Length: 320
Figure 1 (cartoon, one colour):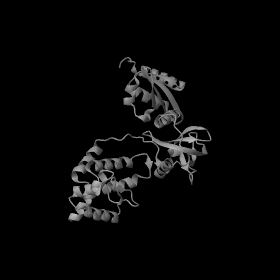
Figure 2 (cartoon, rainbow, N blue to C red):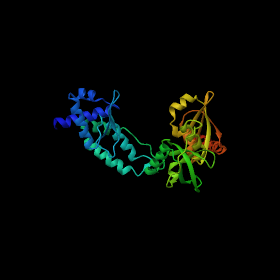
Figure 3 (cartoon, rainbow, N blue to C red):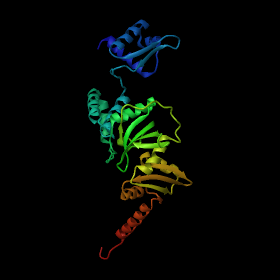
Figure 4 (tube, rainbow, N blue to C red):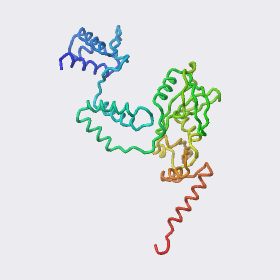
């Protein structure tokens, strides 16, 4: 590799390492003149890198986002992180990106040195994925929603409710929330004069978006608001349970997808749900802590049936 090519790679690595560099600083780091730095900056611009320059005492060179994606320089930790992220994307909840992630991963692995390929392989072999992932969401739907949140544009879409009915909505999108199982949109619904939570996999976006809006304050943390809303609407059997352990203990153990936790004196209230009473009972039993079901009555009744069944199974029968 020529001396100029090596210097360009070193220059690019420096520009990616912090927001702005003065010409004198780059020249000192590279051991060249500021004129050579200017020439090298121009070479990088020719091959596709957007490098902005400003004058003055606070001026310098800044690596910007260009119209096309030029080659990137990643250090060892960044390369491993990207590889693991691509593996996760291939089995995630965003539909339509599995093949794209596979192609990108193949390109990355081809370029990884042996020591990094071994690290990625070790992480893969030591990791077990949870089966039964949530419903997939089209990648374009998520990106269009995210763009509307960024640009503060109203969204128009057809929405399929839990009961299967479909209706048209126009909302002010605030945040996308991923619980680890499903993607949700938190938005202000003007027709209902209230905040609403929508499952992203049930959204069918219309074109174009609506007019721009001025964001309004959310009543609480977006994640907590979504979890509170989904505990009552996303499941066939929403439940409210008192766990007889301190809030801090359960908050450290349970992921957000399990439900919404709130302190209750020395205890903890869990708002959760399931599409099956059997699954709900199994989940609560797996927590390994004493609990009291506050709602619904159907879950309490189901637990009594299970308790009798388990008690009978534990009875010692003659001749056994």
